[in-house]
Image 1 (cartoon, rainbow, N blue to C red):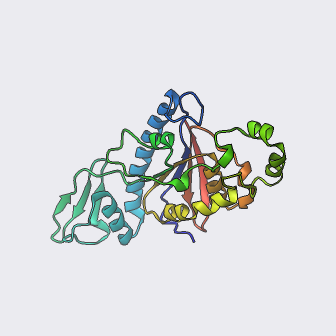
Image 2: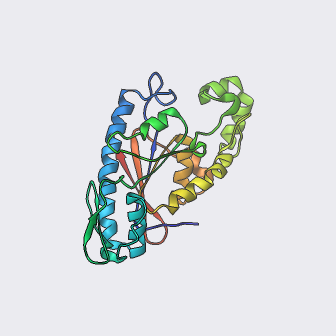
Image 3: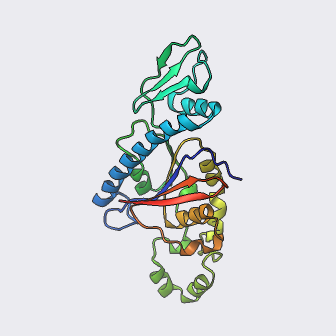
Length: 257
């Protein structure tokens, strides 16, 4: 099921580079924090642009939903027309009452749905310093593929430790389950509810996760066979932007740091 609402984007990125280990440490390193800074600036600018475009092209009901998301409850005395949401500024929203007078709703949170894994490095990546009161949903659904007994090991190390099992992995990387852990097939099932959540949003969505999860997400949004997801490249410090198009497909672009 798809809920492609307007042209609001879904942004996906890996957790930033960490201290001591390029991708598996606990805390972000210098380059990881630099990526976070650039990510925050880009997301804020694009979210404000989205709000302005949204007002121009979307329906009254959608405008009301957006006003509720950025201002809290929609005031009951407002005249619900296309012009009810008069202006979207960078710091406030102007609303119109029934009698024609205007009310500035004051400061608001930039309307972004943020979803991240529960890994510290991912949470740090989306803790965007330039966006105040940002609501961040931490969910284990976005945690990396559980390698079970091989957790923390590179594929090279796994091959040396258990060459017989590794041959099974090479033969069928999608369905082969890590001892005590998951397979990519298991991961796909784990992600179903999160994908529905992403598609139901009326505001931009920012997702921060890890290679295995993003491979699965990209296979879905690219509409390619899920079994091919294990070969998808997911570059570090790159923001993947997905925008719904007419016909139910998604236009994909990349913003490198």
